[in-house]
Image (cartoon, rainbow over all chains, first blue to last red; front, side, top):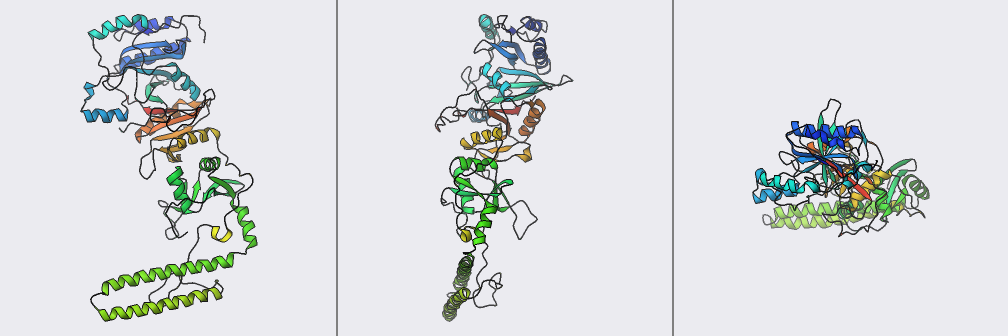
Amino acid sequence: MPLSQPSHSPTQADPTSTAKVAEGCGTATHPAYLQALAREVQHNLLHQHNWTSLRIHTSSPLSHEPLPRPLVSGLPPHRIYVHPDEQIEELKQGLKEEDVGVEREWVLPTRLKEKWSLRRFGEVFDGISEEPAASTPDETQEEEEEEAAMPVQTHVNVKHGKRRGGKRLLLATVGDDSTVVYYIVHDGIVKPRQN
Amino acid sequence: MTEQGTSAIPELPIPIFRVSPQVERYMLYDVNIISWLRKHHNILGVLIGTIPQVPQQNVFLGLPLELLPEEARLLVADGIAYVVDDLSWHRKSIARGEHSERMQQDLRREGLQLAQDFERRKQDKMLEHVEGAKGKRKNRIKQEEEQGSIQAQETLFQGVSNPVGQSLPLAPTQTEPETQPWIIVPTTAESLLGRPAKGPASQMPLVRPASYALFEHLHRRSYFMIPGLRFGCQYSVYPGDPLRFHSHFLASGLDWDEDMDLLDLIGGGRLSTGVKKGWMIGGVDPTREVGDLDSEAIGAKNREAGSALRTFCIEWGGM
């Protein structure tokens, strides 16, 4: 992957405007088809699943190297994953769904026809932190103001940036008819939910 | 042999019987070893023997136990067991044939002992019932019992002098006053042929490296594995004994660069979530450094420590 451009330029997508989304493809560290794929998934999350505060990440928050492919992050309308231990604790404390805020999630866009391998999953996980950043360092101030205006409750039990069960991401797989399916992938042995 | 079900520590290393040099199948015949391995080494295997009285059912199977090649290899690698070629060992040992007479006598004696114990218990119970009601009868039964034991002693000596080929009654019947020995069918050949000798270099069971790496990784972390065919994976992974726990994962081992179809991942993830499990894929990362396998380091937080293997768990996203 060429390092010609400063890889440090993820874009903030305004959930209300799709026009702003297109700005993300200005930084050409990834091939156009991968950028298009990320945008497709971003649109699906935005319009079909009512996610908010979506953005596309092109570089790793840890090493600041380019990611294997652009990743999407955003806030789901309600929590998409609750660790079983956490669920038990919340039940014991009598917490309700509304009391516990949503967590920002990583989303890995893929196409159904692609072949994946353990190495590729490993590389993606090596590039990400447990919790995706809501904004780039330059935008942090702006973001803080936003958060003050529209507070998003952070999880009461979880320290900021740490996740029960370690790193996880949402594997978004786009089919030929642009159906997107979402699967949670954990890095390591994480016991299943007792739905 | 008679103390079935207890898990006394067997003499180590234990023999694992390979059916023949052509077939990669490993058997255990001794129930003590099987229960000991299950209790102390998380080795389950698969019981494959039918019950003679009910040969059609396959819900409850009995001896022998077939080990997965992975299980056999793990035991050999840990020095707990060694592989014996069942076919050639039997041929060699039976050709000598010096022990058969003595074994048959031993079995007969043991069967007689069992029969006598059974009779005695039956009579004791009868005595309890009769006791108090008829004092005189009690005395008479005692006398009979004494006579019975003398007769039993006589049959014991008959057994030694007679060739054992003659037909034996299946169980003592009430019409016959004298105790007949029970027939004992030994499940292992050890009483006849002795313990098979360990060869100079015990062969290693052959396994698929990618699968074995995942099996070993999970086994070292106290998981129990059974074959996962019925869920379309390699292993069903249990957090404890399957008799006490539901399985947590449906696991498949892959090479680090092995291509996988995303459709398989999605299908597996969907199936697993449907049965309240997780779909697990794992393989050895050749670039990863192997640390010490310290049992303290492998806590709930750091389950990946001490291994170059990396695992991923997949669940349905619910959207």
